[in-house]
Amino acid sequence: MDLIASCDGKRIIDVGAGASTLIESLVDNGYDVTVLDISSEALRILSNRHGNNLEYIRGDLSKKLDLGAYEIWHDRAVLHFLVDESAREKYVSNLESCISSGGFAVIETFSTDGEKMCCGLDLHTYDEEMLIDLLGGNWFLVDSIRHTHINPFGGERPYISTIFQRK
Ligand SMILES: C[S@@+](CC[C@H](N)C(=O)[O-])C[C@H]1O[C@@H](n2cnc3c(N)ncnc32)[C@H](O)[C@@H]1O
Image (cartoon, rainbow, N blue to C red; front, side, top):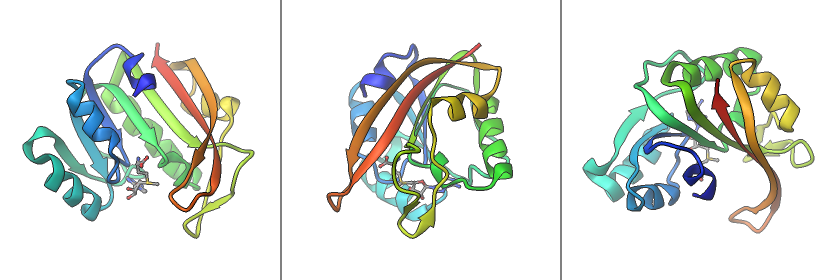
């Protein structure tokens, strides 16, 4: 919430939202929230919790999506599952389709000094330079924080959380 609150704007899309309780904090803090996930089960859980308070999009970030316009894009723990370069290119093009100049991307992924697999899936992990390279020249890095996330099974997962702003 601190990272998101440091960005100007209240219109946010949380991609790969899962069943995150972050959504509750966003709603409580007056954000206009859209959640996107590939999983209809995740969206069903969020819909049971939040009903008409959110907009819901079922979509695969590795494919071209028709998204609205937002001021903030938030991703915790989706990008690192996109192991194919073509999928990552689509991710960036989806991001750029809905965040215009002055808008923000808050991107949080497993860092390169952590695990290379999660839930039996291969990961593509990141450091600051890799995220800067991925987003390309239309963005600048505002802030970057390293921290250790403790997963639900007690495992330590080194993370990198970044804020980018579109030029
Ligand atoms: C590890 S969970 C993170 C959930 C939440 N953001 C959090 O931090 O607790 C990853 C989420 O990304 C979704 N996901 C995975 N691949 C995706 C894709 N290609 N497009 C959209 N969502 C995807 C999964 O369904 C899952 O809900």
